[in-house]
Length: 379
Image 1 (tube, one colour):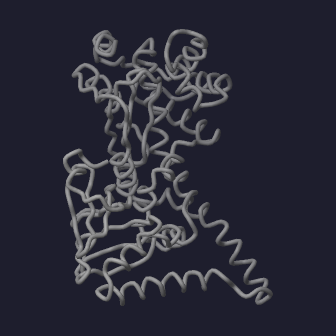
Image 2 (tube, helix red, strand yellow; image 1 turned 30 degrees about the vertical axis):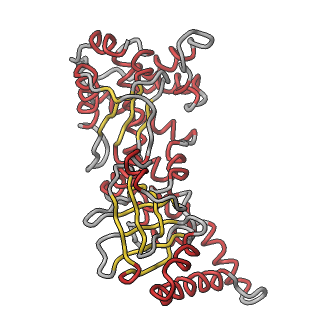
Image 3 (cartoon, helix red, strand yellow; image 1 turned 90 degrees about the horizontal axis):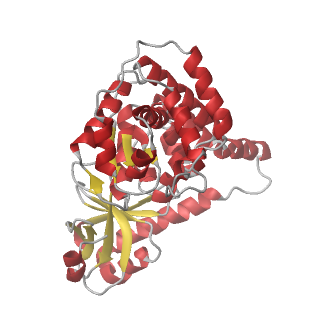
């Protein structure tokens, strides 16, 4: 969203929603785009403006369905992109001859895409069936490659999504709360699978009992969860579960399943920049935390393993499930928010308790943070 003063500076013309990739950066930033008399201007939420003149502009189509138009100055360094309906028509009306060749190129690319999508009926039926099976399985194939990606790709995806999210509620920066969560993350990170994770926690003041993690390690904890918890071990259990979703790359796999065919093929061919295109679509990123029962059970097991290795009590997660289940009909606002996204709680309580009895355990080392100070800070 544009800052109020920036919004007043924009003329009363049609605007399009899109993204900007700034020079020297790879993460797209949401922007409002307008087509002027001399070129295209994009303005980000912080009021920063970027422009590409028609007489120095190149155009290209792309995106996961081929419906994005990328505007760049000759020589690169900046990309303004959108898939908004009517954008190409606005370019054609405003630029005239200055962009005629580029617009013809874009039209040709779209025509070639449409032509390539139609294969003559009845010709090489076996080949068509094979190609169809391959294309049908592209998202699953892309998901299977997520495990081999460097963690830096996960971070780019998570950071891009976090930048675009509009979290309702004030950010909490109380030292006691920050120290508590940072201690949990530090203890668990030392025993996390893989390398290159960057777990960063943002605390938001909201009544909902919830916490979630984005690919790469961005984590959000709502104060409602801290208010609901009876012990630091319960919070540590929730944090371990969410961190396990990151290290097991469940979110990346879920995002990959949303990839269109064109982008999926690019990702299979090693075009890592396509992941940030996926992250630019918040509707797709919303699926990142839409975990399956198998993924939830896997996060339970991996989270319990990290807790045991860190000298923490894995039964805290089971206790938290049990606590929220007991709050049905209580005055605790949003008590079932986290529980509702983690179904089949009874069998999972039993699973976590069984893990706590059977997994190898390090000597117990309670958290050193001041739990009472944490509770006082969020009450």
